[in-house]
Image (cartoon, rainbow, N blue to C red; front, side, top):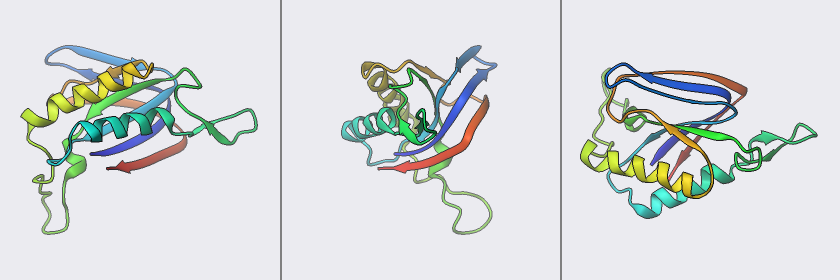
Length: 146
């Protein structure tokens, strides 16, 4: 699994068909791609890592607080293009991404696992054309891979 994580003061996703809106205030915007060898242990690892990342400032301005500590939220967006390979030619290859029938349930599992850990989670719509808006704070952007 690959995730791009951004510390945000606000983020939203809209989908025209089917109509959907997900929005959060302070927290994490997470773009996630499922890879073919990912399984339940990968989902658990990523959920633990996301809720434990100490990337929010404390009273001294140091990155010491996690999303749970600040009572933040997560906006989780599936994005298979993170698994794209651009090494050859000019068109990315997406064979590194898990097939949709495998990836969709794992994205749902990741959202459920994050919620079980006490973090409110909003999502996009798997496979849909989404419009994402965010206010990246810091800016802080990290890439996680397992």
